[in-house]
Length: 539
Image (cartoon, rainbow, N blue to C red; front, side, top):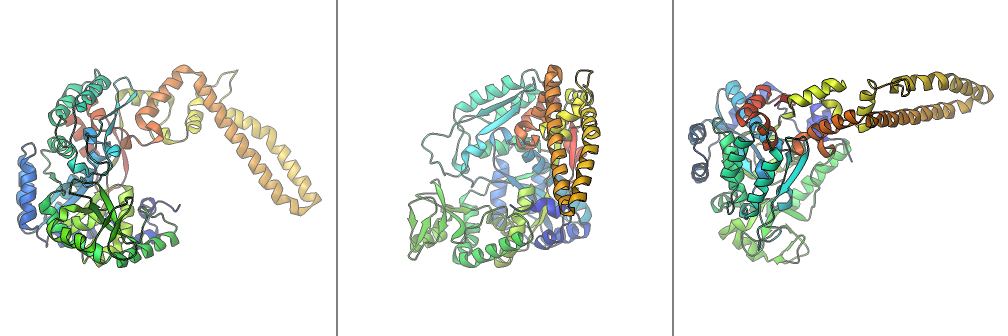
């Protein structure tokens, strides 16, 4: 695998910068993008869809002002989006939305054009398992997983737009309540979730309703593309993706080769025989499969035995375009064809998407947006801050391997019986260093060609001993039960399952500790939408 594209781009790697020329950290680039986007207009049919979808959300004067601005000339959009995870999904969904709001405000101020934020609900996706579970940090510091089952009778590959919550959502909410326990703002959090996550409600509507309530004062619009009117607007792009799939496939392969030549990873594997379009079997609510060209005389459905005749595909493109939907690489193109997009806010993986998409924007005759990295935070409560101070480590240390963290902690636990790791390592070097030096000198004197093997052997011995000292430190830390419990609690909060906190826990876990409004204020107070820095929040 190659190096992370996002990390390389942020570090200023020239190869990465060539593949993604627009840098969101450059003020002049931001101004130019916002002004260029503001020259475009939103179509009346799309405005009508947006108005209807906002009307179904909790009332918001700020959201209505954004909708009104979008109907006027000279308005640009900052878009973000995410799958509609259970109980608002992971924390990074909230961070994406907040970053889009902050970026829109900044672009408006810098460029002097009206700019509104919009959250694109990724309802075309079909991976229900990926959004059906939520992880909750309990008031006792332990992690809990709650989930809902798929609605009976719905095909496995049906778009999330067509899935509804079952009666088990009430059981899931009860589990969340038990996990949050006596957390100060647990009643407030549960009231919001219960207002939107109800049996029979579409998953997407529950997510949008709860998120809209949290951002009611920020003018954040919400958009569900999985409706017939939007499918008709997107149909010309679907048709182009089908008709020019060979050209698109070649362009993606060439871009993949350029990434590989630069030593960079390719975020989305490319299948040249497939289009960027999914086809829904039977009806718009049927399972979806990617269209793939195999031989002549129609299309195969990748992952299925089904086939689609040329005439049937042409009919659907003309009369029933909701039978088609986007892949991860086509969705941004549809987004930017429908909206005057100045910038898209995404995670590190999505920066990688845009590195692949450059040639496709040319094929679809569209201007590429500015790809902006969303904000990233670690959330700490008072107890976590106290424990970190007691153990003399930082929140960032918890993301290191367990042995390295334990070694730092064990430095303060040394006794006459158990020396500190640094003292033990120093003693080993004191005893071993001279002996290795004498051995190397003897070998070099006997045969100069033995010097390099001696050097490598000495380095390997030191590395092995260093790893052994790390294991010793871990044993020392575990021997102290109080320290071991403290480390476990901190790791569960900050790096659960060896994964960044924002990719495991969701909004309920943090808001329950300090209140939804306080969490909102803390995020926006720390948020610089174009800094791409990792910050810390006290909740």
